[in-house]
Length: 228
Image (cartoon, rainbow, N blue to C red; front, top):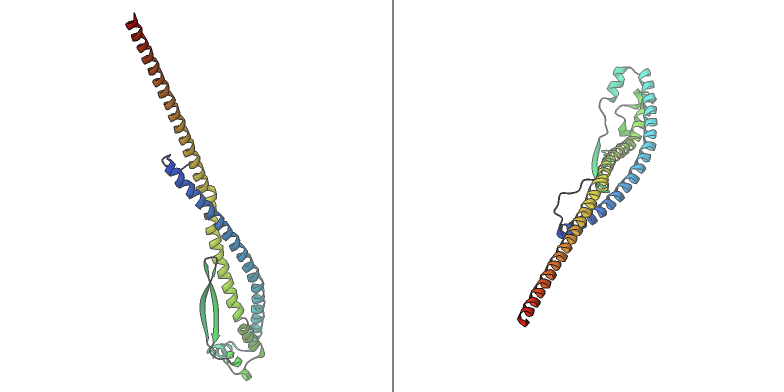
Protein backbone atom coordinates (compact mmCIF):
# COMPACT_ATOMS: atom_id res chain seq x y z
CA UNK A 1 0.00 0.00 0.00
CA UNK A 2 1.42 3.38 -1.03
CA UNK A 3 1.94 5.78 1.84
CA UNK A 4 1.19 9.49 1.91
CA UNK A 5 3.91 11.92 0.90
CA UNK A 6 4.48 13.79 4.19
CA UNK A 7 7.40 14.97 6.29
CA UNK A 8 8.30 12.44 9.03
CA UNK A 9 7.85 14.79 12.00
CA UNK A 10 6.18 14.34 15.36
CA UNK A 11 3.65 17.06 14.52
CA UNK A 12 2.72 15.23 11.32
CA UNK A 13 2.50 11.96 13.25
CA UNK A 14 0.05 13.51 15.70
CA UNK A 15 -2.06 14.93 12.86
CA UNK A 16 -2.17 11.59 11.03
CA UNK A 17 -3.16 9.73 14.19
CA UNK A 18 -6.10 12.13 14.58
CA UNK A 19 -7.06 11.56 10.94
CA UNK A 20 -6.89 7.79 11.48
CA UNK A 21 -9.22 8.00 14.48
CA UNK A 22 -11.65 10.14 12.45
CA UNK A 23 -11.45 7.78 9.46
CA UNK A 24 -12.20 4.75 11.62
CA UNK A 25 -15.15 6.50 13.24
CA UNK A 26 -16.47 7.57 9.83
CA UNK A 27 -15.97 4.04 8.51
CA UNK A 28 -18.06 2.60 11.34
CA UNK A 29 -20.83 5.19 10.87
CA UNK A 30 -20.95 4.59 7.11
CA UNK A 31 -21.11 0.81 7.62
CA UNK A 32 -24.01 1.28 10.05
CA UNK A 33 -25.72 3.57 7.52
CA UNK A 34 -25.17 1.05 4.72
CA UNK A 35 -26.60 -1.80 6.81
CA UNK A 36 -29.68 0.26 7.78
CA UNK A 37 -30.20 1.33 4.16
CA UNK A 38 -30.03 -2.33 3.09
CA UNK A 39 -32.62 -3.21 5.73
CA UNK A 40 -34.97 -0.45 4.55
CA UNK A 41 -34.32 -1.35 0.89
CA UNK A 42 -35.18 -5.04 1.34
CA UNK A 43 -38.35 -4.17 3.24
CA UNK A 44 -39.48 -1.83 0.44
CA UNK A 45 -38.58 -4.40 -2.23
CA UNK A 46 -40.81 -7.00 -0.52
CA UNK A 47 -43.68 -4.49 -0.30
CA UNK A 48 -43.14 -3.53 -3.94
CA UNK A 49 -43.22 -7.19 -5.05
CA UNK A 50 -46.50 -7.94 -3.27
CA UNK A 51 -48.15 -4.69 -4.40
CA UNK A 52 -47.02 -5.14 -8.02
CA UNK A 53 -48.63 -8.58 -8.17
CA UNK A 54 -51.89 -7.11 -6.85
CA UNK A 55 -51.83 -4.18 -9.29
CA UNK A 56 -50.97 -6.37 -12.28
CA UNK A 57 -53.82 -8.74 -11.43
CA UNK A 58 -56.25 -5.80 -11.24
CA UNK A 59 -54.96 -4.37 -14.52
CA UNK A 60 -55.40 -7.74 -16.19
CA UNK A 61 -58.98 -7.85 -14.95
CA UNK A 62 -59.61 -4.33 -16.23
CA UNK A 63 -58.09 -5.24 -19.58
CA UNK A 64 -60.35 -8.27 -19.88
CA UNK A 65 -63.39 -6.12 -19.11
CA UNK A 66 -62.33 -3.56 -21.72
CA UNK A 67 -61.81 -6.35 -24.25
CA UNK A 68 -65.35 -7.64 -23.67
CA UNK A 69 -66.74 -4.09 -23.83
CA UNK A 70 -64.92 -3.51 -27.10
CA UNK A 71 -66.49 -6.67 -28.48
CA UNK A 72 -70.07 -5.60 -27.70
CA UNK A 73 -69.70 -1.86 -28.41
CA UNK A 74 -68.59 -0.14 -31.58
CA UNK A 75 -65.15 1.52 -31.46
CA UNK A 76 -66.66 4.95 -32.21
CA UNK A 77 -69.23 4.69 -29.42
CA UNK A 78 -66.62 3.38 -26.94
CA UNK A 79 -64.25 6.24 -27.77
CA UNK A 80 -67.07 8.78 -27.45
CA UNK A 81 -68.10 7.37 -24.06
CA UNK A 82 -64.60 7.80 -22.61
CA UNK A 83 -63.59 11.02 -24.40
CA UNK A 84 -64.67 13.58 -21.77
CA UNK A 85 -64.01 12.48 -18.15
CA UNK A 86 -66.16 14.03 -15.42
CA UNK A 87 -63.88 13.44 -12.45
CA UNK A 88 -60.74 15.51 -11.86
CA UNK A 89 -57.78 14.25 -9.82
CA UNK A 90 -55.04 16.40 -8.23
CA UNK A 91 -51.71 14.87 -7.26
CA UNK A 92 -49.52 16.21 -4.44
CA UNK A 93 -45.89 15.41 -3.72
CA UNK A 94 -44.13 15.42 -0.36
CA UNK A 95 -40.87 13.96 0.87
CA UNK A 96 -39.74 11.90 3.83
CA UNK A 97 -36.20 11.29 4.97
CA UNK A 98 -34.75 7.78 5.12
CA UNK A 99 -31.14 7.82 6.30
CA UNK A 100 -30.44 11.22 4.62
CA UNK A 101 -32.31 10.21 1.43
CA UNK A 102 -35.40 12.29 0.61
CA UNK A 103 -37.86 9.84 -0.92
CA UNK A 104 -41.22 10.87 -2.44
CA UNK A 105 -44.68 10.56 -0.92
CA UNK A 106 -47.52 10.73 -3.45
CA UNK A 107 -51.08 11.61 -2.55
CA UNK A 108 -54.13 12.40 -4.65
CA UNK A 109 -57.53 13.98 -4.16
CA UNK A 110 -60.62 13.84 -6.35
CA UNK A 111 -62.57 16.99 -7.13
CA UNK A 112 -65.84 15.32 -6.22
CA UNK A 113 -66.62 12.79 -3.51
CA UNK A 114 -69.48 11.33 -5.55
CA UNK A 115 -68.51 7.79 -6.58
CA UNK A 116 -70.64 7.98 -9.73
CA UNK A 117 -68.47 10.82 -11.08
CA UNK A 118 -65.95 8.25 -12.33
CA UNK A 119 -68.35 7.40 -15.18
CA UNK A 120 -68.16 9.99 -17.99
CA UNK A 121 -71.13 8.43 -19.78
CA UNK A 122 -74.67 7.34 -19.16
CA UNK A 123 -75.00 3.87 -17.65
CA UNK A 124 -78.02 3.02 -19.75
CA UNK A 125 -76.21 3.20 -23.08
CA UNK A 126 -73.00 1.27 -22.25
CA UNK A 127 -72.14 -2.30 -21.39
CA UNK A 128 -71.66 -3.53 -17.85
CA UNK A 129 -68.13 -4.73 -18.70
CA UNK A 130 -67.08 -1.13 -19.42
CA UNK A 131 -68.45 -0.12 -16.03
CA UNK A 132 -66.47 -2.93 -14.39
CA UNK A 133 -63.26 -1.81 -16.13
CA UNK A 134 -63.70 1.83 -15.06
CA UNK A 135 -64.50 0.82 -11.47
CA UNK A 136 -61.45 -1.48 -11.33
CA UNK A 137 -59.13 1.26 -12.63
CA UNK A 138 -60.60 3.76 -10.18
CA UNK A 139 -60.07 1.38 -7.27
CA UNK A 140 -56.44 0.64 -8.07
CA UNK A 141 -55.40 4.28 -8.65
CA UNK A 142 -54.20 4.63 -5.07
CA UNK A 143 -52.31 1.32 -5.27
CA UNK A 144 -50.66 2.40 -8.52
CA UNK A 145 -49.47 5.63 -6.93
CA UNK A 146 -48.15 3.70 -3.95
CA UNK A 147 -46.38 1.30 -6.33
CA UNK A 148 -44.75 4.22 -8.15
CA UNK A 149 -43.71 5.65 -4.77
CA UNK A 150 -42.17 2.36 -3.65
CA UNK A 151 -40.31 1.82 -6.91
CA UNK A 152 -38.88 5.34 -6.89
CA UNK A 153 -37.90 4.93 -3.23
CA UNK A 154 -36.20 1.61 -3.96
CA UNK A 155 -34.30 3.18 -6.87
CA UNK A 156 -33.09 6.12 -4.75
CA UNK A 157 -32.10 3.85 -1.86
CA UNK A 158 -30.18 1.57 -4.24
CA UNK A 159 -28.22 4.58 -5.53
CA UNK A 160 -27.46 5.73 -1.98
CA UNK A 161 -26.42 2.18 -0.96
CA UNK A 162 -23.98 2.06 -3.88
CA UNK A 163 -22.58 5.49 -3.01
CA UNK A 164 -22.20 4.54 0.65
CA UNK A 165 -20.61 1.20 -0.28
CA UNK A 166 -17.99 2.98 -2.39
CA UNK A 167 -17.19 5.32 0.50
CA UNK A 168 -16.89 2.42 2.94
CA UNK A 169 -14.55 0.58 0.57
CA UNK A 170 -12.48 3.72 -0.03
CA UNK A 171 -11.99 4.15 3.71
CA UNK A 172 -11.46 0.46 4.43
CA UNK A 173 -9.12 -0.41 1.57
CA UNK A 174 -7.44 2.90 0.68
CA UNK A 175 -7.47 5.70 3.23
CA UNK A 176 -7.13 3.75 6.50
CA UNK A 177 -4.32 1.47 5.16
CA UNK A 178 -2.54 4.55 3.74
CA UNK A 179 -2.74 6.32 7.08
CA UNK A 180 -1.56 3.22 8.93
CA UNK A 181 1.34 2.75 6.52
CA UNK A 182 2.32 6.42 6.76
CA UNK A 183 2.16 6.38 10.56
CA UNK A 184 4.31 3.25 10.59
CA UNK A 185 6.81 4.94 8.25
CA UNK A 186 6.99 8.10 10.39
CA UNK A 187 7.43 6.09 13.61
CA UNK A 188 10.21 4.11 11.94
CA UNK A 189 11.90 7.30 10.72
CA UNK A 190 11.61 8.96 14.13
CA UNK A 191 13.05 5.88 15.82
CA UNK A 192 15.85 5.82 13.26
CA UNK A 193 16.59 9.50 13.84
CA UNK A 194 16.53 8.93 17.59
CA UNK A 195 19.00 6.06 17.26
CA UNK A 196 21.16 8.25 15.02
CA UNK A 197 21.11 11.08 17.53
CA UNK A 198 21.96 8.65 20.33
CA UNK A 199 24.89 7.30 18.29
CA UNK A 200 26.16 10.82 17.64
CA UNK A 201 25.84 11.73 21.30
CA UNK A 202 27.76 8.61 22.31
CA UNK A 203 30.44 9.42 19.73
CA UNK A 204 30.68 13.02 20.98
CA UNK A 205 30.90 11.72 24.53
CA UNK A 206 33.72 9.35 23.54
CA UNK A 207 35.54 12.21 21.81
CA UNK A 208 35.19 14.43 24.88
CA UNK A 209 36.41 11.65 27.13
CA UNK A 210 39.36 11.08 24.81
CA UNK A 211 40.16 14.78 24.80
CA UNK A 212 39.93 14.87 28.60
CA UNK A 213 42.24 11.84 28.83
CA UNK A 214 44.79 13.42 26.49
CA UNK A 215 44.61 16.69 28.40
CA UNK A 216 45.20 14.83 31.67
CA UNK A 217 48.18 13.00 30.18
CA UNK A 218 49.65 16.24 28.90
CA UNK A 219 49.17 17.83 32.27
CA UNK A 220 50.86 14.88 33.98
CA UNK A 221 53.80 15.16 31.59
CA UNK A 222 54.16 18.85 32.29
CA UNK A 223 54.07 18.20 36.04
CA UNK A 224 56.70 15.48 35.65
CA UNK A 225 58.99 17.86 33.70
CA UNK A 226 58.71 20.50 36.41
CA UNK A 227 59.56 18.02 39.12
CA UNK A 228 62.58 16.73 37.22
